[in-house]
Amino acid sequence: MKEKKPDGKMKLKYIGGIRVDILKGLIVRGLKAKKLKGLMNGGSKAKKLKAQSKLSQMKLWAIRVTTMVLLWCIAMQFKGLGQVLEPRLFKTGSAYSLPPTRIYKNNGYLMVSSNGGLNQMRAGICDMVAIARYLNVTLIVPELDNTSFWNDHSQFEDIFDVDYFITSLRDEVQILKELPPKQKQDVQQETLYSMPPISWSNMTYYYETILPRIRAYEVVHFTKTDSRLANNGIPDEVQKLRCRVNYKALRFAPPIEEMGKKIVNILRERGPFLVLHLRYEMDMVAFSGCNEGCNEEEIEALTIMRYAYPWWKEKEIDSKQKRNDGLCPLTPEETALTLRALDIDRDIQVYVAAADIYKAEKRMKSLKEVFPNLVKKETLLEPSELEPFRNHSNQMAALDYYVSIESDIFLSTYGGNMAKLVEGHRRYLGFKKTILLDRKLLVNIIDRFKNDTMSWDEFSVSVKAAHADRMGNPTRRLEVPGKPKEEDYFYSNPQECLSPVDEL
Image 1: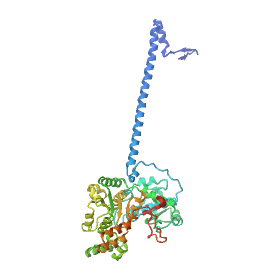
Image 2: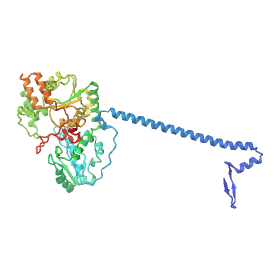
Image 3: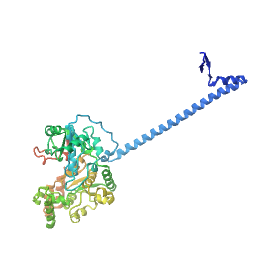
Image 4: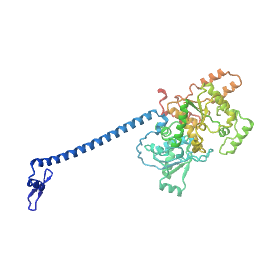
């Protein structure tokens, strides 16, 4: 290394890493060439040791990195295996890649108050998402009905995974938990424009009537959500979005998912199980006016209950005629006969998806005799496990819905909202066995069997023949133009979202 002197001349400062002045001193003292060579070699050894140390460190880091990569690969293999073994319903809980946010010009905000029980509200929420998406408006997370007969004060986030609901649909529609500050202040200072949309409307109604109102008021509030979209005559892309919301985005809140999964696991460990949606709670019997098998005292109590609720419009009901028309839920006794006639294995677990059965000790006796493995969530779980869900009828119904979707067989004694939505969901999952009872035929032949005008063998053959094609198999949705209440419900057979009937 050279160093510049004050006079501008250069002088050597280092030679081979040894200072020049030290080198001169060594020479003056008569240092032998061998010793000098030893010093020079010592410097080389130091460099060599340093290089070896650096190489060792590099090897150590390489081992660490390789180990981390191997551990990551093993973890991914176990994760993939878990997803293969996991039941189909539970795959929604696996790692989720967020879709890209859809960018569009926002036409305003839509607030909705869902009405009815859990499954009526569920279908309405799906409709509202589809409407908001195709009107290019921002949807505020729906408010759930807290004023119905069941008096359940659960909010959206108590039943559904609200964050997943919002993020999983963000490529279709913007959903907010509440109005932005400006719009919220405007709503608080002025009267909110509220209205119930016309039932069974097509998209033209929303484009021509609702969209101008949203643009005019910026925020519009729907007071009802049930049956606000038609079953038929809707573009396929709208129908498919209704399905996506229902079967993908509306995932139950984690506590409900976990408890539902636990019930299913308990049942699976014991063998196959049938879910019986037995609609024979006191309110159902009272409001339907169906009193088959009830004594005079019970009929009077049910009538008093029906009259006690002014919102239930139908008061005087001809129970016998309604039953003959197939409009009454089957009684527990009628259900037992039907299951026997269908040759359902008496040893199968029968999970009763219902609230308290009216006069259960008396009415459930025949069903227990035929199917001794009669269970419900209250008998499968500890009281402490169900405690967080008690006094929340919609959360309890959500647990039953979860188990119903996973069952080997599903059967409902009445065609209510839960029966319809479970039927459609099981079709979506691969046409899982779902027995759709022909109640009008059943009550007729049950009476004949009881009157000894039909033998058991004849009765059993008739029941099997009537239900051979009523097992949730692929079929086209019945359309009745101008009479939407009489046609098949979209959510019971969402055929636009299933494999074409002709290909099955």
